[in-house]
Image (cartoon, rainbow, N blue to C red; front, top):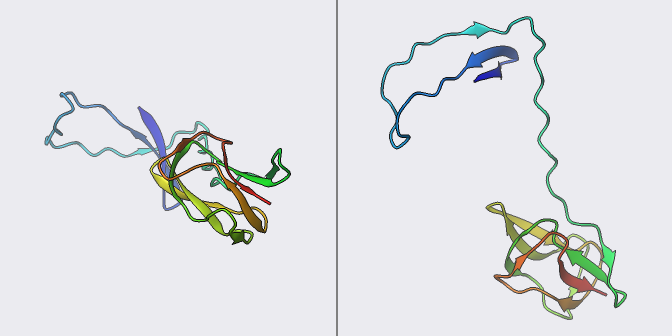
Length: 134
């Protein structure tokens, strides 16, 4: 396989070969070092990493409150508020584990917690309603 690697602003075309074996242990054989200068072919730049996931936009629930939804599938590690609590914009309401990372779920508006629709350990899908604020 051929890859283009940038080191200190210089682009290098490298070739990687798979060495035989079962994959259970690494081969300890010496490897010949070869350096290849990028050819005159245009180098395709790698795309930037996607932006970090932000809180889902506030939506209105059927009861007239603002719903806080899950921005991605995952499991609820903790719920930081109780029904009746006053919350401020940006305050962490719950913690969602997704892709082995902990994600704070913030309040998207100032308000009072009207409903909590999840509990610690629940598995949720994208856009699942977690909490309703009024």
